[in-house]
Image (tube, rainbow, N blue to C red):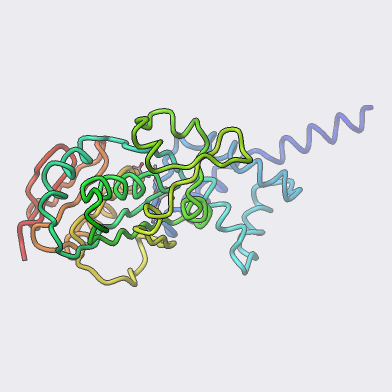
Length: 282
Ligand SMILES: C[S@@+](CC[C@H](N)C(=O)[O-])C[C@H]1O[C@@H](n2cnc3c(N)ncnc32)[C@H](O)[C@@H]1O
């Protein structure tokens, strides 16, 4: 009995997240994807990573850090990053941006072929919303001349988004009209719905770290990078906004999250709405 007690005590003290370990985790995450885990996040980081320590039967965070360093295929590294990032999203989130697309952008598209990009798309609700609005705008008059690229750092969320299957709790706020028109209930499941193929077909998914080189070609008419930069420091945000600027066509739009803002207006953005900007340069 006493020895079991001793073991339990030593196991729990071993799994303290030491300041040096937390610093190392912060550095790895920041260097890899720009996310800035500040001091206040120590308990959260410990709580989230404890699950991985238990799954791998490791007794300390140092062992876990060694494991990640030795993890040549990068599977655990991917899980580590996934666990420490926030994927919260929803359909029609921050809807004033979508209202603007519907009233000002989609009606003027005509047959012009353009590209849109959801950068940091998480589980796909953002690009799916864009695709549904495009389909609505074009009615039965054929396919919208728009290709939507949707990318995220996490391969797990990209896989999920590709499937396009959502449980009813994710669809709580979905207007009935869209649910009926663009989703099919999965017969063998009591509460899951799949996005219909014509919507899925408008979107191409890919895994992309925004801090690394971008393999795709622009220019984009719309870039939505919402609730992603909030986790980056000012300098990383500034550089990213500049890269977005160069990826946009003249007159193109950059939408960011409502708690984010673009400060480099001097490179040629004008504000059109809260958290929405239009490129005025060439
Ligand atoms: C909170 S979600 C936002 C989803 C959606 N844009 C929205 O506003 O609802 C943030 C997403 O950004 C992704 N992310 C974080 N850092 C990234 C990076 N360096 N490159 C690409 N995606 C990143 C995360 O994996 C996560 O899915």
